[in-house]
Image 1: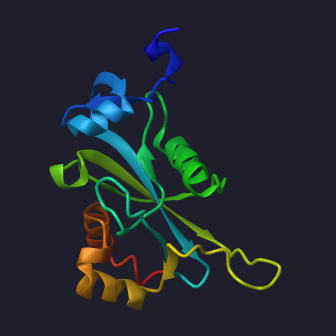
Image 2: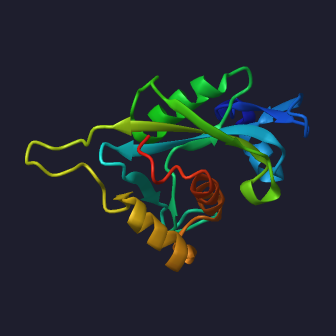
Length: 181
């Protein structure tokens, strides 16, 4: 068996032109490496009181080690709808299966966001409590209230992934932090 046969094939992603027309289909890793235009999804997960769930990336993470970011972001695979991609990404990243995702807005592809046409969804879920009454948050996960998030974005920008800063600025412009999803 050759080395290529031994490795599992990378998922395929449609490369898009500025008018969002598919011009090629390439492995997701190659699209990301070359920063080619493609569709992607992110799911903002809120709890019932309206706190936004973020995750700090591992210290060994490639682009943004130790920074807060949305834990549910991924490419739209070739032939996949953005809704299906959001459901798949949410389940892969957080183990949550929900088809009740609400579309929020779309962001254009720019070099700052990795040339992703980003489709943003939201989900409100009840808090997961263990039998002892504690929440299931891990040390690198946190539910930010709108006030805490504002402080993080204003005073501690260096602790936030640059792609999340772009997303958060768009959400703030639309006044969505004040409204419960």
